[in-house]
Image 1 (tube, rainbow, N blue to C red):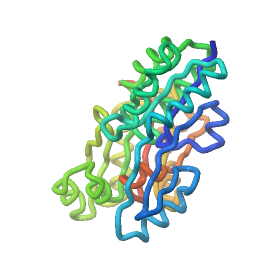
Image 2: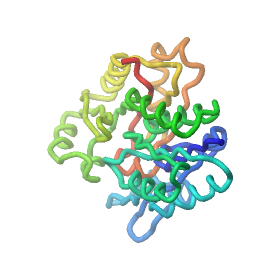
Image 3: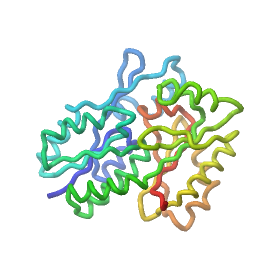
Image 4: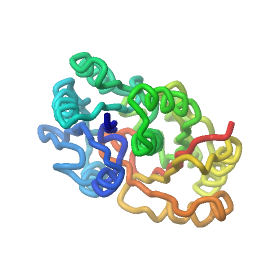
Length: 282
C-alpha cells in the first residue's frame, strides 16, 4: 500500500516543493485584529511581514483542528494510501494533539509524529519521510526510521531580536532584555521541542560567525536533507551568509534549498532571522 506524507503549513514548503515531493498539507492561520488569514492561502509571506512590521500589535496564531486533519486523512486513505503525518513541536502548539485525535478514527492507516521542531527544522524531517515513502517503505517502518532520525535533526537560527519571542510568550522578558542590550544577536535552537538560546554575539558579523561555529560543532550529514531559511522581506542577509560560509558546503552540497519562514512561525521569530537545518553527525 502506498504511503503519503502529510505536514502542517509551519513546515514552510512552497507549493512547488509540496508538489515535487508529493506531500500534502494542513494549514494553520494567523489573525491581525479581527481579520484571520489562512497561512499560504489568504496571505503570502511578503504580505505577512509587511503587516507585521507596520502593526502595533503582535498577530495571534491558531492551531490546526482535528477536523482539519480528519478531512485530509479521509481523502488520502480514501485514495488507498496510508498516511504518516508530521507536525510542528507539541511544546509550541496543540496541532500535534489535533492530529492525534483525528488519527484515532483511522487505526492502522494513519500515524502521527511530533517533529519536535519548526519551519525548516521540521521540513528536513518531512523531506526524509518523503524519501522513505518514495522508496516504498511501509507506514510502521517509515515512522520508526523518521522517529530515529528526528534525534539528529538540528535547526539553528540567528535572530535579529528576541522581542518577538518575548511578546509571543515563548521566552521570558528577562531573557529578551539581556539579548537586546549592546546589539546582541541571539542564536537559538529547539531542545526537546522548545526554544533555547544557545549563543549570543555582538553584531551581525559575529552572529553569523557563531552560527557557522555551532554548525561545525555538530557536523553535517550531507547524505540527509538540509535547508536554509530566512524571515522578513529580503533574503539578502541569508544569501550573504551562504556566500560567506561556503567552506561548509562547497564540494558537499549540490544545492542549498532556501525557504522563507511563514506567518505562523514568523510571528514569533520576527523579521531579519536566518536559519540552517541539517542532520548532525554527532
